[in-house]
Length: 161
Image 1 (cartoon, helix red, strand yellow):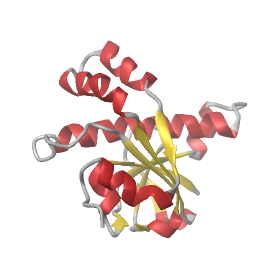
Image 2 (cartoon, rainbow, N blue to C red; image 1 turned 180 degrees about the vertical axis):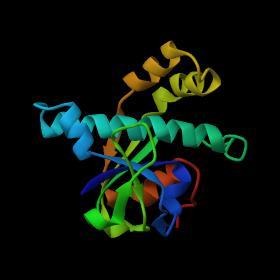
Image 3 (cartoon, helix red, strand yellow; image 1 turned 90 degrees about the vertical axis):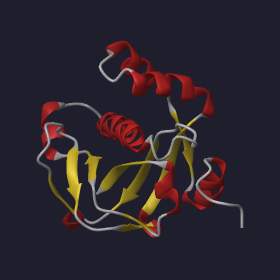
Image 4 (tube, rainbow, N blue to C red; image 1 turned 45 degrees about the vertical axis):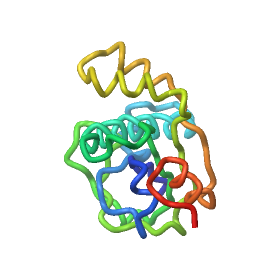
């Protein structure tokens, strides 16, 4: 199963990705959007993960005030048994029950630096639909998992070795 893990820059330096609420193309999502392509369903799950990443960043902001504001979504392939139904209103949400190793990661997605003002506005005004829509319009860049260390350095959570 392909999962989309909402993350922050600090996750890029973790030995594994810890269990948490993640997003995937669930049977409920597929039923609700019957007739849509797999690619579209995956984009819905991915977008839910980007929203959750922004919430994680906002929650960590006092501690991470000096770091750039960039959403991070990590796509990984896991066994179906690694996830369970989540007690969440989003039909894409599943509970990741075990840590995910970097060998299971297929890609990392991170905001471009030019998105930072829009993301900061969305964090500062969490009840603003306009700010949320603007953040939602910002597209994340694709990175191969082999670029993880370089991304961590760029985002200020690791030193260059």
